Length: 114
Length: 111
Image (cartoon, each protein chain N blue to C red):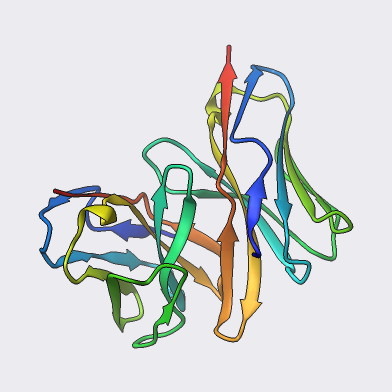
């Protein structure tokens, strides 16, 4: 079936390291991707997005890379901080007859230790 | 900033009860969504709405219904609550279905 998934359910890093969270998607027609961060007790929060006509987009300490050839998406967090500890989801924008909807991956839990 | 407000953070109900979960957004977004989030299953779409009085089924609509009488408000209804509907429920809104903004969720327990 068509779904968005993440390679690893958990990732542990040391404070100051760079983190890379990966995501594989299966719908080659998807034209838009989003990364969300969900902290404990809160709803998902938008981090960064990328359109399919781009292969890289940078924000503040975060970079999203898109490889359409292998249908792979990654989120890179530079100089990871304890406040980055959360669950990270990728989401794929799917357009069908009813309109557009996001399909979410299952999430990667990032743990940052001091 | 967009604000999506869910009426309750925690809710405990009994099996067979009719349960209403309310969601209000303040950015005049056309699109609103209801998801449930369960460990190991991620976010699953229950229902969504692209306009007032309009609704579309998501991936897991069984046992649920929705109401959108006003643009800013989207209600999720459990017609007869069951224990397998114990979950975290998340509401979201967006402009044209992308960059969805989420509320902080309602953790619903059905006893």
